[in-house]
Amino acid sequence: MEDKYYKIDRCSNSELSRIKRELQGQQMYAASEASLLFGRMFHYATLEPRKYDPRHVDMSSRILLESMCKTLRSNFQFNLFANHPKTTFEEVVVFNFETVRLKCKLDARLHDWIIDPKSTSTTSREEFIKTFDDYGYWRQAFLYMFACRATRFTFFGVTKSKNNCKLFVVNAHEFPHKLKEAEAEAKLLTKHYVFQKQKAT
Image (cartoon, rainbow, N blue to C red; front, side):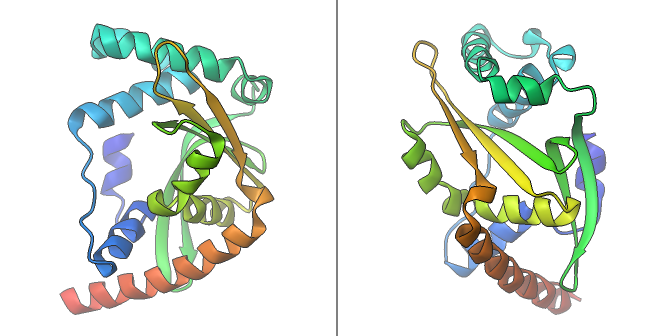
């Protein structure tokens, strides 16, 4: 699934984040193989436990994942969503936005509601929300909702802590002004994407 998604020749939110950082004169953060593996195992452990294989991570990471998973699954809203028979996981959606062909992969969706668990090093909900601009989370919420005509998008931020794991729930749809800003930013960045593609040909 991962390889197939990356081979789809369409722009993604991650690509727009790269362009934004480039315009700001910043380097794009390159996640390590270990970080990518941990993220994949976090997704499986929390949303698709049948795919989770603890042998793929070391003991320290396994203990951390179990703590994070336990904290996330203690939330009634998340449990209701994750266990619903009509919830889809890792759904790939291709769509058009402005003049650009885009793609996205949803962690989980139930009808018009999308959820996305995130691991975080922040220590409060307010601090977690402050990271959204840097990581492109508002733009992600806007584009994914646009792609699926969804009306709700919920982030579940789970702290990376073995002993005192915390959960921060953020309903992006309750921040319409941030989604409006994200829409404007997406329009600007897609224009730069088109410009870069034209320049490269």
